Length: 330
Image: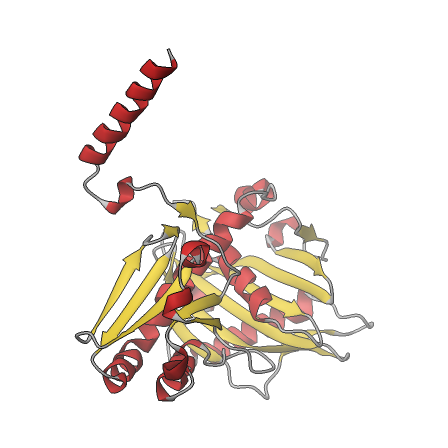
């Protein structure tokens, strides 16, 4: 009987191999690694010279909108001869290949899944440096997108039941069960939600509400409009620790502003710093104004963190990952 089962198993494996015409038919290990940590496969000599400096200029560029400099990614340099076995299962890999024709290739699930491997080759260092500079934004976006997806998949393992938000705002948003919907002085008809999580040194927050479509005009004063709106919301709903204190925008920092697509809708993204009027508290925020033309409104989703004396990149990254799960009902 065991012999028959063995023959059947071998037959199934052979058939599977014959039918498998793509890498998707391979059995891959789960990828691993901390969020926002990139493995860079390059030899020690190149890493310690101008090529390594060029790599760091791309991957470790400081993130705008944080109170202190923090790199976009942490880098783990790995010599090619060491990049074997379980080390290849890192979720994000930048691989440098010297002595080969110049080119850049974006590959999925080469050694594990999910995984993004970017291979940059060149006959000499200057060719690779040129490709790094030319493709820097795309490299960052590629790695960031897989990290956002991974973070969201981890959060989905234990989600908060946010049916009250779906009922009143007509949208879904996914956030972990360690968060809670905090109490405010908002009335039911305000449809305003303050979502909070306590962390070791403070707390992370998401504000979620709607505005009529006429509340924001697409003109040269967009940033000023966003700041005015968030300041009015802060004064009305976000009380500080002392009587009469409330959250406002820190005007010593110039906000970063761009437009992205979120849930297939044009979205205004603004990053900056907040502080508390009447108290000593401050931190970073990221604000998304999603244009919901079908329902003639704007959905405002803002994440902000209070975490004094510690790095805040990963806290803000989690808030961004949560906000980017928003799906607005049609």
